[in-house]
Image (cartoon, rainbow, N blue to C red; front, side, top):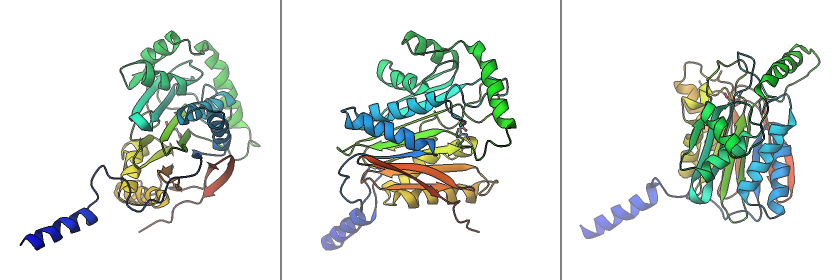
Length: 319
Ligand code: SD4
């Protein structure tokens, strides 16, 4: 009987992945920082983050600096004040940030006229006892912190600029959407952030997946990090980033975890694979993954001092 019990306990400990255990087959950690970010503009975010980290900044500093660059770019994506305005013609911005070592998190949603919502999110994490601030309160806090702001009446001009871009037949393929940036430092600690103006033409007050922990971004310092871009409603209904981290915890490679989450969502969602969503993931060992529901998805990866722009095609649909 005793032998049987020992055998059973042994079997359970090797077969059952406890809820807080690291992935079982993860190789040793990386030699230097590893980063992954969404969309072509993600390469610039990765480069800035690497520079920041190589200059002595923390992984969190790297994530913040990389995302700030994209918030300032005024690209034709949906990031920052020059991103896509809501249905009333002005930008309401969402951002969040996570710090692996203490599982810290900060988030702002629907904030107006703040140039760097990612910094506002970091200040929420570091300077308040809260995790998330929204709307007027988030703006008040950011101003109180001395963060750069603009007069929201300028949004009329921003809307005109955006409409002009939309009408431009030569604008080519638009590098649209959220910047999500995940980082693993040389110590094996994880950091992540995302920032967006959200889906263009959204109702004022609409909040997407990006500032919602577990939806647009999630990390567990013992396991890995995951983030999303695309139509937030189709991400947040499935708490997708937390799901990807849990799949990595069960031992899946980040690539397999991103794809498995897409298949899981497509199986249960009335939209099937027509979700317009993409994921990136990075595990504790520095392995990366990316997947997209129904489009080609470019993303950037940085290792050591170099970055490259990669892409995945849409995931192969399962019946
Ligand atoms: C959102 N996921 O608010 C964000 C923005 C984005 O396509 O990626 N839009 O839904």
